[in-house]
Image (cartoon, rainbow, N blue to C red):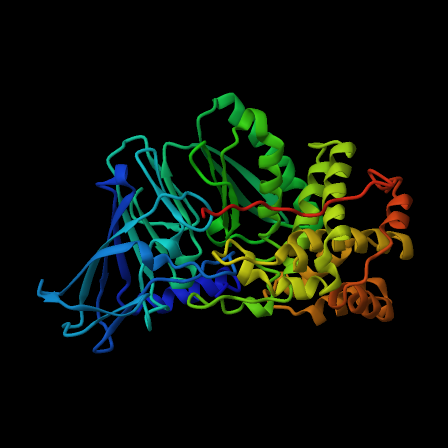
Length: 503
Protein backbone atom coordinates (compact mmCIF):
# COMPACT_ATOMS: atom_id res chain seq x y z
CA UNK A 1 0.00 0.00 0.00
CA UNK A 2 3.03 2.31 0.34
CA UNK A 3 4.31 4.36 -2.57
CA UNK A 4 7.62 3.50 -4.18
CA UNK A 5 8.64 7.00 -5.22
CA UNK A 6 7.38 10.36 -6.34
CA UNK A 7 7.42 8.97 -9.88
CA UNK A 8 5.12 6.12 -8.87
CA UNK A 9 2.82 8.62 -7.19
CA UNK A 10 2.54 10.51 -10.45
CA UNK A 11 1.89 7.30 -12.34
CA UNK A 12 -0.84 6.28 -9.93
CA UNK A 13 -2.37 9.72 -10.14
CA UNK A 14 -2.37 9.70 -13.93
CA UNK A 15 -4.11 6.34 -14.11
CA UNK A 16 -6.66 7.51 -11.56
CA UNK A 17 -7.51 10.60 -13.63
CA UNK A 18 -8.71 8.31 -16.41
CA UNK A 19 -11.57 7.33 -14.10
CA UNK A 20 -14.06 9.53 -12.29
CA UNK A 21 -12.60 10.50 -8.90
CA UNK A 22 -14.21 9.63 -5.60
CA UNK A 23 -15.46 12.93 -4.15
CA UNK A 24 -16.06 13.56 -0.43
CA UNK A 25 -17.78 16.56 1.13
CA UNK A 26 -17.21 16.96 4.88
CA UNK A 27 -18.96 19.37 7.25
CA UNK A 28 -19.40 19.86 11.00
CA UNK A 29 -22.82 21.43 11.67
CA UNK A 30 -23.13 19.59 14.98
CA UNK A 31 -19.54 19.66 16.19
CA UNK A 32 -20.70 20.45 19.73
CA UNK A 33 -22.09 16.91 19.85
CA UNK A 34 -19.02 15.39 18.16
CA UNK A 35 -20.68 14.62 14.83
CA UNK A 36 -19.38 14.83 11.26
CA UNK A 37 -21.59 14.87 8.18
CA UNK A 38 -20.03 13.17 5.15
CA UNK A 39 -21.30 12.84 1.59
CA UNK A 40 -19.36 10.78 -0.94
CA UNK A 41 -20.11 10.58 -4.67
CA UNK A 42 -19.14 7.74 -6.98
CA UNK A 43 -19.55 7.98 -10.75
CA UNK A 44 -19.03 5.44 -13.54
CA UNK A 45 -19.62 2.58 -11.12
CA UNK A 46 -18.63 -0.59 -13.00
CA UNK A 47 -20.70 -3.10 -11.00
CA UNK A 48 -24.40 -3.46 -10.25
CA UNK A 49 -23.65 -3.47 -6.52
CA UNK A 50 -21.66 -0.72 -4.82
CA UNK A 51 -20.00 -2.20 -1.72
CA UNK A 52 -19.28 0.45 0.90
CA UNK A 53 -16.90 -0.42 3.73
CA UNK A 54 -15.68 1.01 7.01
CA UNK A 55 -12.14 -0.05 7.86
CA UNK A 56 -11.39 -2.31 10.80
CA UNK A 57 -7.71 -1.38 11.04
CA UNK A 58 -5.59 1.74 10.66
CA UNK A 59 -2.07 2.21 9.23
CA UNK A 60 0.39 2.32 12.11
CA UNK A 61 -1.86 0.14 14.27
CA UNK A 62 -1.90 -3.63 14.21
CA UNK A 63 -5.07 -4.54 16.16
CA UNK A 64 -8.71 -4.45 15.11
CA UNK A 65 -10.80 -1.33 15.69
CA UNK A 66 -14.49 -1.45 14.88
CA UNK A 67 -14.91 2.00 13.37
CA UNK A 68 -18.32 1.17 11.86
CA UNK A 69 -19.93 1.28 15.31
CA UNK A 70 -20.15 5.08 15.17
CA UNK A 71 -21.84 5.33 11.73
CA UNK A 72 -25.56 6.16 11.39
CA UNK A 73 -28.05 8.04 9.19
CA UNK A 74 -26.84 6.19 6.09
CA UNK A 75 -28.72 7.42 2.99
CA UNK A 76 -28.09 6.80 -0.72
CA UNK A 77 -29.45 8.30 -3.95
CA UNK A 78 -28.55 7.80 -7.61
CA UNK A 79 -27.45 10.42 -10.11
CA UNK A 80 -31.04 11.64 -10.57
CA UNK A 81 -31.79 11.91 -6.87
CA UNK A 82 -33.72 8.64 -6.67
CA UNK A 83 -33.48 7.09 -3.21
CA UNK A 84 -31.63 3.78 -3.08
CA UNK A 85 -31.58 1.07 -0.44
CA UNK A 86 -28.34 0.64 1.49
CA UNK A 87 -28.42 -2.92 2.82
CA UNK A 88 -26.11 -3.70 5.71
CA UNK A 89 -24.70 -7.14 4.89
CA UNK A 90 -22.23 -7.33 7.77
CA UNK A 91 -21.19 -5.01 10.61
CA UNK A 92 -18.80 -3.12 8.32
CA UNK A 93 -20.41 -3.14 4.86
CA UNK A 94 -23.41 -1.59 3.12
CA UNK A 95 -24.45 -2.83 -0.34
CA UNK A 96 -26.22 -0.41 -2.69
CA UNK A 97 -28.02 -1.66 -5.80
CA UNK A 98 -30.37 -0.23 -8.42
CA UNK A 99 -28.17 2.76 -9.24
CA UNK A 100 -27.69 4.35 -12.67
CA UNK A 101 -23.88 4.38 -12.54
CA UNK A 102 -23.78 7.15 -9.95
CA UNK A 103 -24.30 6.92 -6.20
CA UNK A 104 -24.28 9.73 -3.67
CA UNK A 105 -24.02 8.33 -0.15
CA UNK A 106 -24.36 10.41 3.01
CA UNK A 107 -23.90 9.44 6.64
CA UNK A 108 -23.24 10.82 10.09
CA UNK A 109 -20.35 9.61 12.19
CA UNK A 110 -19.64 10.30 15.87
CA UNK A 111 -16.18 10.78 17.31
CA UNK A 112 -14.93 12.09 20.65
CA UNK A 113 -11.43 10.65 21.00
CA UNK A 114 -8.64 12.74 19.51
CA UNK A 115 -5.59 10.50 19.19
CA UNK A 116 -3.73 8.58 16.50
CA UNK A 117 -6.40 5.94 15.95
CA UNK A 118 -9.82 7.53 16.26
CA UNK A 119 -11.42 10.91 15.58
CA UNK A 120 -12.32 13.79 17.85
CA UNK A 121 -14.77 16.53 16.87
CA UNK A 122 -15.78 19.49 19.03
CA UNK A 123 -16.09 23.26 18.85
CA UNK A 124 -12.29 23.69 19.01
CA UNK A 125 -11.18 21.36 16.24
CA UNK A 126 -11.87 18.52 13.85
CA UNK A 127 -9.27 15.80 14.38
CA UNK A 128 -9.73 12.96 11.91
CA UNK A 129 -7.95 9.67 11.45
CA UNK A 130 -9.16 8.70 8.00
CA UNK A 131 -9.98 4.97 8.56
CA UNK A 132 -12.06 5.96 11.59
CA UNK A 133 -13.99 8.55 9.60
CA UNK A 134 -14.47 7.66 5.95
CA UNK A 135 -16.29 4.88 4.12
CA UNK A 136 -14.71 3.57 0.94
CA UNK A 137 -15.88 1.40 -1.96
CA UNK A 138 -14.52 -2.05 -2.64
CA UNK A 139 -13.16 -2.26 -6.18
CA UNK A 140 -12.49 1.49 -6.44
CA UNK A 141 -9.31 1.59 -4.39
CA UNK A 142 -7.23 2.85 -7.34
CA UNK A 143 -9.35 5.93 -8.06
CA UNK A 144 -8.18 9.42 -7.22
CA UNK A 145 -9.78 10.95 -4.13
CA UNK A 146 -10.97 14.54 -3.83
CA UNK A 147 -12.11 15.88 -0.48
CA UNK A 148 -13.65 19.23 0.40
CA UNK A 149 -14.06 20.47 3.95
CA UNK A 150 -16.63 23.03 5.08
CA UNK A 151 -16.39 24.82 8.41
CA UNK A 152 -17.70 28.05 9.89
CA UNK A 153 -14.88 29.20 12.20
CA UNK A 154 -12.73 31.68 10.27
CA UNK A 155 -9.68 30.93 12.43
CA UNK A 156 -9.55 27.27 11.42
CA UNK A 157 -7.16 25.91 8.81
CA UNK A 158 -6.04 22.46 7.66
CA UNK A 159 -2.95 20.42 8.56
CA UNK A 160 -2.51 17.23 6.54
CA UNK A 161 -0.16 15.38 4.20
CA UNK A 162 -2.85 15.36 1.49
CA UNK A 163 -2.03 17.33 -1.64
CA UNK A 164 -3.54 20.81 -1.78
CA UNK A 165 -6.39 21.15 -4.26
CA UNK A 166 -7.92 24.10 -6.07
CA UNK A 167 -8.60 26.09 -2.89
CA UNK A 168 -7.75 26.19 0.82
CA UNK A 169 -10.48 23.70 1.75
CA UNK A 170 -9.94 21.11 -1.01
CA UNK A 171 -7.37 18.30 -1.00
CA UNK A 172 -6.57 15.27 -3.13
CA UNK A 173 -4.98 11.84 -2.87
CA UNK A 174 -3.83 9.63 -5.76
CA UNK A 175 -5.76 6.64 -4.45
CA UNK A 176 -7.40 5.10 -1.39
CA UNK A 177 -4.13 3.84 0.11
CA UNK A 178 -2.65 7.31 0.35
CA UNK A 179 -5.94 8.83 1.49
CA UNK A 180 -6.43 6.29 4.27
CA UNK A 181 -2.91 7.06 5.54
CA UNK A 182 -3.43 10.85 5.68
CA UNK A 183 -4.82 12.22 8.99
CA UNK A 184 -6.38 15.68 9.08
CA UNK A 185 -6.47 18.37 11.76
CA UNK A 186 -8.67 21.43 11.23
CA UNK A 187 -8.32 24.05 13.94
CA UNK A 188 -6.78 27.38 14.88
CA UNK A 189 -3.34 25.82 15.28
CA UNK A 190 0.01 27.62 15.32
CA UNK A 191 2.22 26.79 12.34
CA UNK A 192 5.99 26.89 11.95
CA UNK A 193 7.62 25.95 8.64
CA UNK A 194 11.27 25.59 7.71
CA UNK A 195 13.25 24.30 4.75
CA UNK A 196 15.67 21.40 5.03
CA UNK A 197 18.23 20.61 2.36
CA UNK A 198 19.20 16.97 1.89
CA UNK A 199 21.54 16.21 -0.99
CA UNK A 200 20.46 18.44 -3.84
CA UNK A 201 16.83 18.57 -2.74
CA UNK A 202 15.17 21.12 -0.49
CA UNK A 203 12.00 20.09 1.34
CA UNK A 204 9.63 21.69 3.82
CA UNK A 205 9.01 20.61 7.40
CA UNK A 206 5.76 21.91 8.90
CA UNK A 207 4.98 21.91 12.62
CA UNK A 208 1.29 22.47 13.36
CA UNK A 209 0.50 22.81 17.07
CA UNK A 210 -3.04 23.07 18.44
CA UNK A 211 -2.52 24.08 22.07
CA UNK A 212 -3.32 26.57 24.84
CA UNK A 213 0.19 27.94 25.25
CA UNK A 214 2.09 30.96 23.99
CA UNK A 215 3.84 31.85 20.74
CA UNK A 216 7.15 31.96 22.62
CA UNK A 217 6.64 28.36 23.77
CA UNK A 218 5.98 27.30 20.19
CA UNK A 219 9.15 29.04 19.00
CA UNK A 220 11.29 27.37 21.67
CA UNK A 221 9.73 23.98 20.99
CA UNK A 222 10.28 24.39 17.24
CA UNK A 223 14.02 24.81 17.78
CA UNK A 224 14.12 21.53 19.70
CA UNK A 225 12.12 19.71 17.02
CA UNK A 226 14.56 21.06 14.44
CA UNK A 227 17.43 19.58 16.46
CA UNK A 228 15.72 16.18 16.43
CA UNK A 229 15.29 16.37 12.65
CA UNK A 230 18.99 17.16 12.20
CA UNK A 231 20.19 14.31 14.42
CA UNK A 232 17.96 11.70 12.83
CA UNK A 233 18.87 12.79 9.32
CA UNK A 234 22.54 12.33 10.26
CA UNK A 235 21.92 8.68 11.17
CA UNK A 236 20.64 7.80 7.71
CA UNK A 237 22.71 10.35 5.81
CA UNK A 238 19.71 11.94 4.14
CA UNK A 239 16.02 12.69 4.43
CA UNK A 240 13.49 10.55 2.62
CA UNK A 241 11.95 12.16 -0.44
CA UNK A 242 8.60 13.30 0.90
CA UNK A 243 5.71 13.06 -1.54
CA UNK A 244 4.74 16.60 -2.56
CA UNK A 245 7.92 17.92 -0.90
CA UNK A 246 6.50 18.30 2.62
CA UNK A 247 6.48 16.57 5.99
CA UNK A 248 3.95 17.71 8.62
CA UNK A 249 3.95 17.25 12.40
CA UNK A 250 0.25 17.39 13.37
CA UNK A 251 0.16 18.14 17.09
CA UNK A 252 -2.66 18.41 19.61
CA UNK A 253 -1.36 19.33 23.07
CA UNK A 254 -4.58 19.87 24.98
CA UNK A 255 -6.10 18.61 28.25
CA UNK A 256 -9.02 16.91 26.48
CA UNK A 257 -7.13 14.79 23.92
CA UNK A 258 -5.70 11.30 24.44
CA UNK A 259 -1.96 10.79 24.54
CA UNK A 260 -0.64 9.11 21.41
CA UNK A 261 1.80 9.20 18.53
CA UNK A 262 1.07 7.74 15.11
CA UNK A 263 3.37 7.68 12.12
CA UNK A 264 2.27 8.22 8.53
CA UNK A 265 4.16 8.42 5.26
CA UNK A 266 4.65 12.20 5.17
CA UNK A 267 3.22 13.24 8.53
CA UNK A 268 2.65 12.15 12.09
CA UNK A 269 -0.03 12.62 14.72
CA UNK A 270 1.20 13.83 18.12
CA UNK A 271 -1.35 14.05 20.93
CA UNK A 272 -0.84 14.72 24.62
CA UNK A 273 -2.57 16.28 27.61
CA UNK A 274 0.78 17.81 28.57
CA UNK A 275 1.59 21.41 27.73
CA UNK A 276 4.70 22.71 25.97
CA UNK A 277 6.17 24.56 28.93
CA UNK A 278 6.21 21.75 31.49
CA UNK A 279 6.23 18.59 29.39
CA UNK A 280 8.46 19.37 26.43
CA UNK A 281 10.93 16.53 27.05
CA UNK A 282 8.18 13.90 27.11
CA UNK A 283 6.58 15.46 24.03
CA UNK A 284 9.90 15.48 22.20
CA UNK A 285 10.33 11.79 22.97
CA UNK A 286 7.23 11.14 20.89
CA UNK A 287 8.44 13.53 18.18
CA UNK A 288 11.75 11.67 18.03
CA UNK A 289 10.06 8.27 17.82
CA UNK A 290 7.53 9.24 15.17
CA UNK A 291 9.91 11.17 12.92
CA UNK A 292 12.35 8.24 12.97
CA UNK A 293 9.48 6.23 11.52
CA UNK A 294 9.58 8.19 8.27
CA UNK A 295 12.64 6.05 7.55
CA UNK A 296 12.08 2.98 9.73
CA UNK A 297 8.56 1.53 9.13
CA UNK A 298 7.26 3.91 6.49
CA UNK A 299 10.01 3.20 3.95
CA UNK A 300 12.16 0.53 5.58
CA UNK A 301 9.02 -1.57 5.60
CA UNK A 302 8.37 -5.12 6.90
CA UNK A 303 7.13 -7.41 4.15
CA UNK A 304 4.58 -8.78 6.64
CA UNK A 305 2.78 -5.40 6.59
CA UNK A 306 2.52 -5.17 2.81
CA UNK A 307 -0.06 -4.66 1.55
CA UNK A 308 -1.67 -3.29 4.70
CA UNK A 309 -4.98 -5.02 5.33
CA UNK A 310 -7.82 -2.63 6.20
CA UNK A 311 -10.21 -5.46 7.08
CA UNK A 312 -8.18 -7.80 9.31
CA UNK A 313 -5.49 -7.57 11.97
CA UNK A 314 -1.95 -7.17 10.66
CA UNK A 315 0.66 -9.46 12.27
CA UNK A 316 4.40 -8.97 11.93
CA UNK A 317 7.48 -10.68 13.39
CA UNK A 318 9.61 -7.61 12.68
CA UNK A 319 8.13 -5.08 15.13
CA UNK A 320 11.06 -5.52 17.53
CA UNK A 321 13.06 -3.76 14.78
CA UNK A 322 10.38 -1.51 13.29
CA UNK A 323 9.08 -0.24 16.63
CA UNK A 324 11.68 -1.36 19.15
CA UNK A 325 14.79 -0.03 17.42
CA UNK A 326 12.85 3.16 16.74
CA UNK A 327 12.23 3.44 20.49
CA UNK A 328 15.93 2.88 21.16
CA UNK A 329 16.88 5.73 18.86
CA UNK A 330 14.10 8.00 20.12
CA UNK A 331 15.87 8.45 23.45
CA UNK A 332 19.39 8.24 22.03
CA UNK A 333 18.64 11.08 19.61
CA UNK A 334 17.45 13.30 22.47
CA UNK A 335 20.78 12.67 24.20
CA UNK A 336 22.78 13.35 21.04
CA UNK A 337 20.85 16.58 20.51
CA UNK A 338 21.65 17.64 24.12
CA UNK A 339 17.96 17.77 24.98
CA UNK A 340 18.34 15.30 27.84
CA UNK A 341 21.32 14.65 30.10
CA UNK A 342 23.28 11.43 30.48
CA UNK A 343 21.57 10.83 33.82
CA UNK A 344 18.15 11.22 32.20
CA UNK A 345 19.15 8.87 29.40
CA UNK A 346 20.50 6.29 31.85
CA UNK A 347 17.30 6.52 33.87
CA UNK A 348 15.30 5.57 30.79
CA UNK A 349 17.55 2.58 30.14
CA UNK A 350 17.12 1.52 33.76
CA UNK A 351 13.33 1.43 33.50
CA UNK A 352 13.29 -0.48 30.23
CA UNK A 353 16.02 -2.92 31.19
CA UNK A 354 14.28 -3.67 34.49
CA UNK A 355 11.16 -4.66 32.55
CA UNK A 356 13.04 -6.95 30.19
CA UNK A 357 15.18 -8.48 32.93
CA UNK A 358 12.35 -9.15 35.40
CA UNK A 359 9.34 -9.95 33.21
CA UNK A 360 8.35 -13.66 33.36
CA UNK A 361 7.25 -13.49 29.74
CA UNK A 362 10.86 -13.38 28.57
CA UNK A 363 11.12 -17.09 29.31
CA UNK A 364 8.39 -17.82 26.74
CA UNK A 365 9.48 -16.04 23.57
CA UNK A 366 12.02 -13.65 22.13
CA UNK A 367 11.56 -10.29 20.40
CA UNK A 368 10.29 -11.82 17.15
CA UNK A 369 7.67 -13.82 19.02
CA UNK A 370 6.60 -10.83 21.10
CA UNK A 371 6.15 -8.86 17.88
CA UNK A 372 3.44 -11.27 16.80
CA UNK A 373 1.36 -10.26 19.83
CA UNK A 374 0.71 -6.76 18.46
CA UNK A 375 -2.85 -7.52 17.26
CA UNK A 376 -3.79 -8.26 20.88
CA UNK A 377 -2.06 -5.36 22.61
CA UNK A 378 -1.69 -2.42 20.20
CA UNK A 379 -4.64 -0.42 21.53
CA UNK A 380 -6.67 -3.59 21.15
CA UNK A 381 -9.79 -3.89 23.30
CA UNK A 382 -10.79 -6.90 25.39
CA UNK A 383 -12.88 -7.28 28.54
CA UNK A 384 -11.79 -10.76 29.60
CA UNK A 385 -8.91 -11.28 32.01
CA UNK A 386 -5.49 -11.70 30.46
CA UNK A 387 -2.19 -13.07 31.71
CA UNK A 388 0.03 -10.66 29.80
CA UNK A 389 1.98 -9.61 32.90
CA UNK A 390 3.35 -13.15 32.93
CA UNK A 391 3.47 -13.87 29.21
CA UNK A 392 4.23 -10.65 27.32
CA UNK A 393 6.89 -7.95 27.05
CA UNK A 394 6.21 -4.99 24.81
CA UNK A 395 8.09 -5.24 21.53
CA UNK A 396 8.77 -1.53 21.97
CA UNK A 397 10.67 -2.13 25.21
CA UNK A 398 12.14 -5.53 24.33
CA UNK A 399 13.19 -4.24 20.92
CA UNK A 400 14.71 -1.07 22.36
CA UNK A 401 16.86 -3.04 24.79
CA UNK A 402 17.83 -5.43 22.00
CA UNK A 403 18.91 -2.37 20.01
CA UNK A 404 21.00 -1.20 22.96
CA UNK A 405 22.57 -4.65 23.26
CA UNK A 406 23.41 -4.84 19.56
CA UNK A 407 24.80 -1.30 19.45
CA UNK A 408 27.11 -1.91 22.41
CA UNK A 409 28.12 -5.35 21.10
CA UNK A 410 29.06 -3.90 17.71
CA UNK A 411 31.15 -1.19 19.37
CA UNK A 412 32.91 -3.84 21.46
CA UNK A 413 33.60 -6.41 18.74
CA UNK A 414 33.96 -4.43 15.50
CA UNK A 415 36.12 -1.31 15.31
CA UNK A 416 34.27 1.65 13.86
CA UNK A 417 30.95 -0.20 13.56
CA UNK A 418 27.82 0.91 15.41
CA UNK A 419 24.10 0.34 15.01
CA UNK A 420 24.02 3.53 12.93
CA UNK A 421 25.83 1.69 10.14
CA UNK A 422 23.28 -1.13 10.23
CA UNK A 423 20.38 1.31 10.03
CA UNK A 424 22.02 3.23 7.20
CA UNK A 425 22.59 0.02 5.24
CA UNK A 426 18.98 -1.05 5.78
CA UNK A 427 17.98 2.34 4.41
CA UNK A 428 20.27 1.97 1.40
CA UNK A 429 19.17 -1.55 0.52
CA UNK A 430 15.48 -1.45 1.48
CA UNK A 431 14.32 2.05 2.41
CA UNK A 432 15.37 4.18 -0.56
CA UNK A 433 14.05 1.62 -3.04
CA UNK A 434 11.12 0.71 -0.75
CA UNK A 435 11.68 -3.02 -1.04
CA UNK A 436 9.95 -4.70 1.94
CA UNK A 437 12.25 -6.74 4.19
CA UNK A 438 12.10 -9.78 6.49
CA UNK A 439 14.00 -10.77 9.63
CA UNK A 440 16.33 -12.80 7.42
CA UNK A 441 17.16 -9.64 5.49
CA UNK A 442 18.11 -7.77 8.67
CA UNK A 443 20.34 -10.69 9.67
CA UNK A 444 22.02 -10.68 6.26
CA UNK A 445 22.63 -6.91 6.40
CA UNK A 446 24.11 -7.25 9.90
CA UNK A 447 26.49 -9.88 8.55
CA UNK A 448 27.49 -7.64 5.66
CA UNK A 449 28.10 -4.57 7.84
CA UNK A 450 30.23 -6.50 10.33
CA UNK A 451 31.86 -8.76 7.77
CA UNK A 452 30.95 -11.64 10.09
CA UNK A 453 27.93 -13.65 9.00
CA UNK A 454 28.46 -16.15 11.83
CA UNK A 455 28.12 -13.36 14.38
CA UNK A 456 24.88 -12.18 12.78
CA UNK A 457 23.47 -15.69 12.69
CA UNK A 458 24.34 -16.33 16.33
CA UNK A 459 22.94 -12.99 17.50
CA UNK A 460 19.65 -13.56 15.73
CA UNK A 461 19.34 -17.14 16.92
CA UNK A 462 20.01 -16.30 20.56
CA UNK A 463 18.51 -12.84 21.00
CA UNK A 464 15.84 -12.40 18.30
CA UNK A 465 14.28 -15.81 17.69
CA UNK A 466 15.14 -17.24 21.11
CA UNK A 467 14.99 -15.46 24.45
CA UNK A 468 18.53 -15.47 25.80
CA UNK A 469 19.53 -12.38 27.77
CA UNK A 470 22.61 -10.38 26.83
CA UNK A 471 25.17 -9.62 29.54
CA UNK A 472 24.09 -6.00 29.89
CA UNK A 473 26.31 -5.39 32.90
CA UNK A 474 29.45 -6.07 30.88
CA UNK A 475 28.26 -4.16 27.82
CA UNK A 476 27.21 -1.09 29.80
CA UNK A 477 30.48 -1.10 31.74
CA UNK A 478 32.44 -0.60 28.53
CA UNK A 479 30.32 2.52 27.96
CA UNK A 480 31.15 3.80 31.44
CA UNK A 481 27.76 2.91 32.91
CA UNK A 482 27.34 0.81 36.05
CA UNK A 483 24.44 -1.65 36.15
CA UNK A 484 23.52 -2.89 39.61
CA UNK A 485 20.50 -4.02 41.57
CA UNK A 486 18.57 -1.10 43.00
CA UNK A 487 17.64 -2.89 46.23
CA UNK A 488 19.94 -5.91 46.71
CA UNK A 489 18.72 -8.51 49.16
CA UNK A 490 15.14 -7.23 49.14
CA UNK A 491 12.22 -9.19 47.75
CA UNK A 492 9.98 -7.84 44.99
CA UNK A 493 6.25 -8.46 45.18
CA UNK A 494 5.91 -8.55 41.39
CA UNK A 495 3.44 -6.98 39.01
CA UNK A 496 0.11 -6.55 40.78
CA UNK A 497 -3.27 -5.23 39.77
CA UNK A 498 -6.40 -4.79 41.85
CA UNK A 499 -9.98 -5.51 40.89
CA UNK A 500 -13.27 -5.55 42.73
CA UNK A 501 -16.72 -6.98 42.20
CA UNK A 502 -20.06 -6.34 43.85
CA UNK A 503 -21.61 -9.28 45.64
